[in-house]
Image 1 (cartoon, each protein chain N blue to C red):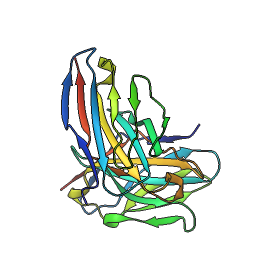
Image 2: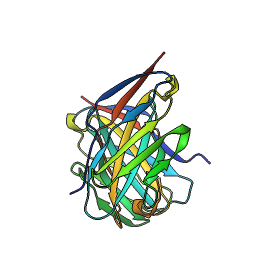
Image 3: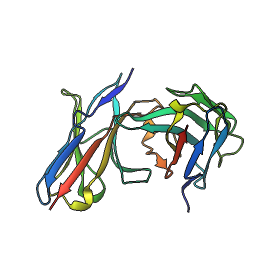
Image 4: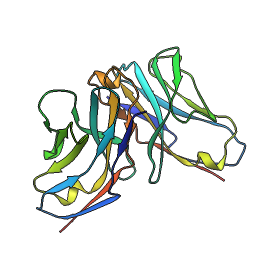
Length: 115
Length: 113
């Protein structure tokens, strides 16, 4: 199993450009999450999904959009990139919800710089 | 709202000595507590969890954590540190029955020879 795969690993965007961060998992997990990691700030939840066709906002959703058309894929879309979106983005998945004794499986991250 | 505090940005310890990485939390209801480790340029990896039961939880790579309800703490410990334990450690909490995991800001552990 590959687990959680994120592409690309690195990307530089100009202000105002758009892009999609890809995330796919091969563990048949229902729950998927997008986090951003900023130095000294820990991880902040952007969006999450409890299954195909269902998504919900996390702590910091502004400037991002998601979709979940299949169980495997959970892409994150940045429409108008801003310097404040410079960060490392992590996708994660779990078979059930977190409080049901189900740890998260993380991808290796996408490092995004907006200049 | 739930929150996690990791009061130390960095912990330095000599190899072979015991290590402790501190974590306190705030959450409504019963807490579900987790420790994750992050190596450079990698995603987070699950170490251990507390859901219910014994207050001392054992996890991967010889790590353990002690849940203290009265002090709302969940400190990570290891009896004998290794240089290979050097990494960034995150504590996280979710409320019982909830789906959102809240992470602390992380503690950089440095184990030196």
